Length: 163
Length: 217
Image (cartoon, rainbow over all chains, first blue to last red; front, side):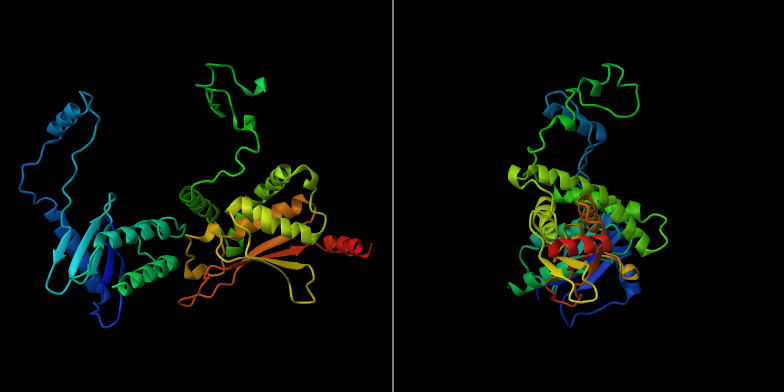
C-alpha cells in the first residue's frame, strides 16, 4: 500500500473531505474525523509560531527587499513560517500541504512511499480543477463532487499499483 | 470608422463603452485572423461556472435553469453560422439546404470550431413515430468537464448551453428546432464515458413538410 488516506481541512479548521484508499484500514467515525481536523488545525497554527530563529520584523524585511532591488521597495510581507509539514511514525507518514489560502491537504502514506510531493501536487491540481471550477461547489463547504472522487480514485490507484 | 472613436479626453469622465487608446476595436480585426486561435480552458471553465451560477439564481425548476442556459447559447449559434460560412472556401459558402447537410455541418464545422474536434456521433431517432428527431452525441462535452451535478439536480445537464448554440445554428439556417441535452452516461465505476451527452434535435413540423417536398423532386 502506498497512499493510505487523504484529508482536506478548510481555512477555519473544518473537515471538508476525507477518504481512505484500500481495504482493511482503520476507520474513525465522523465525529472523530472532525475532531482530528480541528486538532490538527490548532497544532499546525502552533508549529507555525515555534520558529526559534529571530524573525525579521516587517520594517527590516522591507529594508532588505529595497536593498536587493536597488533601492526600490516593493511592498510585500516576509514569507510566513510554514508550520508542520511532515509527521512520521513507525507505521505511516503524514504529509501536510498548506495552500496560500489556508486550505490544508493531509496525505497519509506508508513510510516507504517515494515522491509524496508529486502526488500532493497532483491532488492539489485535481482539487483546483474538479472542485474549484465546479459551479455547484460552495467555498469552505464539504466537497461532494463525483468527478473529483472519480479522478482522485483513478490517480491514487495508479500510484499504488506502480510500486 | 471614425465615428466609432469618441472625442479624445472626454472618455475618462464618461461612463459607458471605453475604447483602447490605439482606437482599434475588435471590429477592426480581420475575421480570419483568429481562425486557428485557442483560448485558455481554465478561464473558460471559470467563466462558464459563473454563467451557470448566474443562471441558477431564483429558478423554480431544473427546466428553468436549462432554459436560461439555452437562451445564453442561442445568439452564439446565430452568429457562429455566419462566421463559419464566411470562412468556408468561396464555392462552398452556401447555407445547408437539407437536414442532413445541416446536421453534418454542426457535427463537423461547428464542433471543430468550438471544441477542436468533431462530435462523436450523429444518429436518426430509431423510433418510426418520431422522424423529426435527430441525435448528436458527445462523449465528453467540454463545458461539463469540471462539473459535478449534485444528486438533487440529477436531471440537469449544463450542456444545455451547447444545445442553445445548436438551436441558434438551426434557427439561423431556417430550420427551426428545439434542442435539448440529456445525460446518458452510466455512473458505474470504470465507465469509459460517464459524461456522455446526447443533444436531441427536434425539428418543427414545417421543416419536415418542406423536407418531404424536397425529397420528391
